[in-house]
Image (cartoon, rainbow, N blue to C red; front, side, top):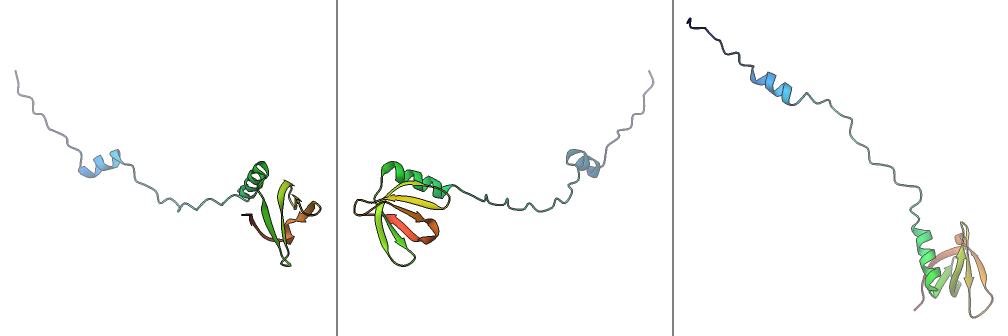
Length: 102
């Protein structure tokens, strides 16, 4: 038997790194997603107060305060049931703020 001269072929370290992790491209920075136009928080609040018939205080832009419960609402107004006085239809832009009575 003849002795066979074998040569060990060893790849360079750079070649191994390239095989393991391909070169990364510079990705553009990720932009924050645009927040949704509507969160439905206002609608959720109205429905919750309507279902529990919560006594509310409505302070109008002119300073007048009204007491009552919300019967229904839509995009631009609230229907308020009052014990003292007639029921009212309040336009949302005329309401400065509102809070739970008591």
